[in-house]
Image (cartoon, rainbow, N blue to C red):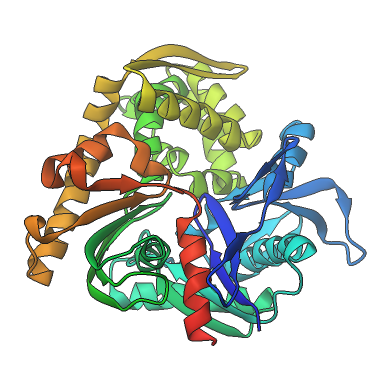
Length: 426
C-alpha cells in the first residue's frame, strides 16, 4: 500500500508519497516550461471545446492558467475553492450551461492532480492522508468545520479515494520537521496558507519515527488572501468605483454598493459576480453613476473574468515587498490601467489589523496550553505568507531570532502528511 499525503490548499496543492524507510518523494508538475512541486488549485472551463457528454472541457492546475491566458480570458476560471467549503450557501453553480456542485469541482481538481502524480510516482491506490486547517476560512462554529470536512471527504471520494484520514496541517508540518531532529524539542509550528493561519505546539522526539505529543492547536481564517484583499481595496477598488456615487431617479445621490467590492477582494467570490442578476445591476449603475467610466472598468473586470490577472499583479507586488522597502503595483487590463508605487510601510499599515489577530491567535494557543514563550525550543514557520516581513517580525518579537526556523514553505505539509500515512495505513 502506498503512503500518500495530499495538501489541498486554497492557492496551491501538493502531493507526496513516503517509503517505509522514511524517504519522501514529491510529485512535480510542468508549468511554463519549468518544473514545480505545487499544483495550482484552480480549474479552467474551455468555452470552445467539450467532452463527449457535452460537458465543457476542464483543465486543472498549471495547465489551467496557460489555457485561460491563451483563450484571452474567455471561459471560466475557478479558484480558491477550498474557501467555500464551510458555506452552506454555495451548493452548486452553472458553468457554460452545466451545473456543478462544489464537491464535484474539487473532485475534478483532485482527480486531475492524482492522475498527473501517478504518471511519475506510480499507482497511488485508494488511501490518503489529507491536511486540514484547524478552522476553515469562513467557519464560525465547530459545526461549520465539520460540514467543510464532510464536503471535502465527498470530493476526495469522487476523485477515487476510499480510505481518507485528516490531519491538522501544522501537525503534518511538525512530522516533516521532526524527521530532521536528533533530540527532543518543544516546537511551535506556524503554517500560513492562502485562507488560514494555523498553529500547533508539539513535543517531538528525534527522527520521523520518534514520539510526538500535540500540546495544543489553534487557527484563524486570516492569511495570504486577507493580505491580498487589502492591496485590492487600497489600490484597485477606487479605480473601479469604490466610494463613488450614483444618482437614482428620485432623491439624493447614493454610494455604489460596497458588497460589490467585498466580492472583488475575494478571489473565490469574484468569478461568481458574473451572474445575470449582478451584471444587470452593474449596467443600471453605469447608467446612473456620477463617474460612469469607473463602473465601466468594473464591468470589464467582471465580464472578462480578470481575477487571475489581478491576482498576479497583487502577488507580484506583495512578493517584491518581502525583499524591498517599496515596489511597483501594475495592473493593465484596458480600460483599467493602474501603475503606482507602494511602500512596505504602507502595506504593513493596511494589514496591521490582520497581523494583530494572528498574534491574538498565537497568544490564545499558549494560554490554553499552559505553556510560556520561554519553554519553546524552536518556531518552525511554513507556508508562503510566512515570508511576509510583518509576519516574521510578529514571531521574532515574541520568540527571538535565534529560535526561528523555516524551509520548504510550500511542500512541508505534504511531506509530513505522507509520513503520517505510514503510521495511519501501516
